Length: 370
Image (cartoon, rainbow, N blue to C red; front, side, top):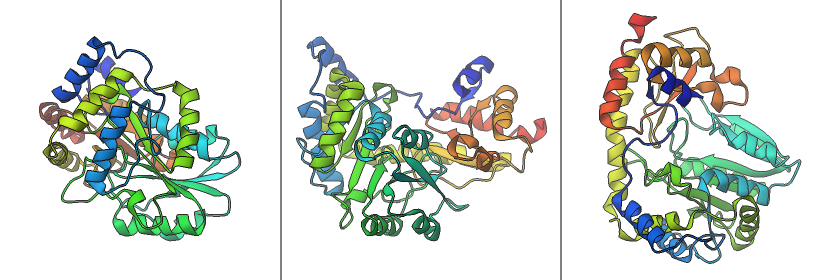
């Protein structure tokens, strides 16, 4: 909706989280070559062998994870389909799934589609975890907890200590951790991304979700992945097969090229690239009168506009789009009770720096326009 409104008003679209700059040539050339080489039919439903092997090697290099490409890895049509496949595979009706809020919009509906119950645990005002509330949310009905780090929409990266406490609760209550780590390489200021699966006792009870979309700026390719214990992986693959059959074969070849050929420096430079964008855009929000925390990872800022306007989030977002020329996402999109997000708007800064400069120039005029 906000993209449509942005187009209607010729506004700068900072709502949807897709980059407006080019993907690496390595991936594009690889995908194009695969098409011309007639790799145009179904791949193995759980992913091409080459892609799975390349990714397994990277998990070993990046995190020391022992990932068997034949038993642990499933390639899906984006991380969004991965989450749906995982929940349908492991969660039964009437069980409960814990979801931190604010949350990526799909987590709650995904749980409901499984005929399970989402149990929402609000983060604190600075986007930290209230572990008293989290412990109270666990019960003998808890099947899983969804952990998104680096986080959309807040930009938090959970610390090792936070993840260890979540892991302890999962083991105490015999629950799975489903981790959405799609922004794993977009981290700032020497913050460390720690996969939950690397913690003691968690390798067999963690399902790790990630994908190529954010790492390689190919959100439209819809290439996601899951890493799970073989028994869980078998169930995920069955659901994935019935949902989508398989991800696009030539695009998997393009991503495999990226994994095999891009240097290790690419991933460090990715954080630097987005860090410059953050450091350009975040100060403009503060100058404009928003209250927000500087993101530690991902490429979003969830900003409080209550000092600027008494309008609810949807009306403020529409006004910002039509009158100021910058389109955000209304904050209520990320809460189970819309009232909790009525004072918030989310901005995506995964854009070229010239476009972010234009957005900053427009935003700092807000007070004079109210």
